Amino acid sequence: MTLRAALLQLTSSDDPAENLAAVTGMVERAAADGAEFVLTPEVTNLLSASRAAQQERLADEAEDRTLAALREQASRLGIWLSIGSLALKSDDPEGRFVNRSFLVGPDGGIRARYDKIHMFDVTISEAETYRESAGYRPGERAVVAATDFGAVGLSICYDLRFPALYRALAQAGAEVILIPSAFAVPTGRAHWEVLLRARAIETGCFVLAAAQVGSHAASQGKQRKTWGHSMAVAPWGEVLLDAGTEPGVHFVDLDLGEVTAARGRIPSLTHDRAFAGP
Image (cartoon, rainbow, N blue to C red):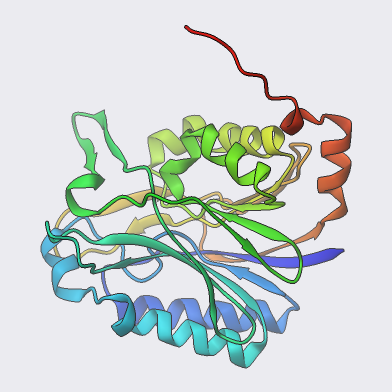
């Protein structure tokens, strides 16, 4: 089976209404050019380093306008849609948000939800520090969802560095793995492509990674910059798409038969052995 996918590369700001206008326009263009599966990056609705701005502008899932609008659009266009993630308010007793991915079907129904498990708590340099767990509640459950074209495993950004998650997704049946991201520039330059290719090779899956890119406008707090380079990688490790450093709509045609072929050549998903130590 061949699937035409469109990866949207965005430069989201801290204004949800502005971001929604940008993403819906891109979704329309993607569907008009034949995309059956459209993917957006991490924090599609709002990208901000300011907790005050997040508290002021975010909503819970039931009230989020981006989610409602994109569900309606998916239904009207008859497409599968991965909303890479939305930043949302939650019922967390500490007042933390959730970073939640949605897989939406052609009827507009939510087929799967996934809350980012691994929190980006790192010090890249003296000038660039992140403490995602201070503002976001981590998820606890891995998710594989059924679609018309195959099983899809969900993940988000920093999850990329934890290969056990992807092995579990593949062994649970995933044939396509999604890694929507807002990758920092220094780590993106050093690690983005090699990690995406590794996850594809290890699992025998297609890896689709829609990404944020560029300098993100901020009315409050520090302005963020992200790496871009939305990518599609085949199960044998070939890079099928590298979107570079400009926002836009980027297409890739996937032959799902390549999953079976790659796993037949190297059936490592069936070769696990228990071991002692270290």
